[in-house]
Amino acid sequence: MAFGGARGLGPRWELPRGAVALFLLLLSAAATPEPPGAACSQNTNRTCEECLRNVSCLWCHTNKACLDYPVSRILPPSSLCKLSSARWGVCWVNFEALIITLSVVGGAVLLAVAVCCCCCCCRRKKSRKPDKSEEKAAREREERRIRQEERRAEMKSRHDEIRKKYGLFKEENPYARFENN
Image (cartoon, rainbow, N blue to C red; front, side, top):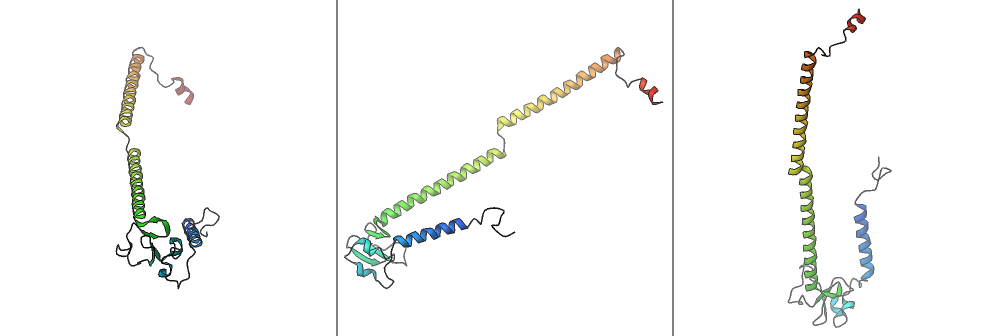
């Protein structure tokens, strides 16, 4: 049968790929880039918005300079522009706030994943191994069942003895011999 046929849903990787494509489409529509030949230094002493239209540019708020983003490093060096005044992508977020926010969000996500993993592991341990009260109740039920069977067997043997004593012991039907001959 072909993959994603009449049996069920399509492959799982379609949704994330579609979401990524939609995100890239919206990102490209929102950030109308400048022509590829335009240098970032042309936007110096202009506005932050004009500078950041080109995604390869970095806006330094202190000296109102539009600089080429140093792609060889993750963060721009302090000799180029201080992190508190560097802007990239949007003008209202500086690199310091971006780093702090991403660190807090990343830590919260990691903490949430760790808590979920711990909860799942603890729940799995509980379901695998019955707790002490359940074990005790099951053991008591089994002991009661065994005692009841012993008493039932004891009472049956007593009743059989009494029947033998008074000649009331249940034997096979004595007339059954005559019927079979």
